[in-house]
Amino acid sequence: MKVKITASNTSFISVGDITEVITNHDGTQVMWSDLCKRYERVSWCKLVWGVEYEEIPEMHDE
Image 1: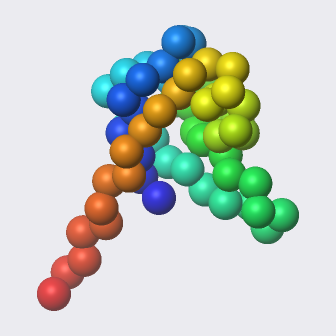
Image 2: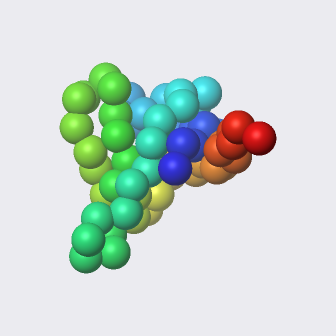
Image 3: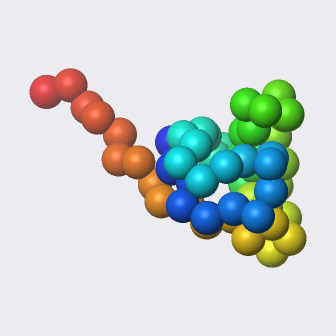
């Protein structure tokens, strides 16, 4: 899913960034960082770096 970052205390991801959150086969969610060119666990981002985000609704062609 695409998300927009609304809060962050880290340079890993910045407020206003639009990125993706994916769910791994084991159920863990990870977030992509364009700056670092890697994924990090969403739980870690939230707990340690205060990251918050809002989901961007998918646009479907009718």
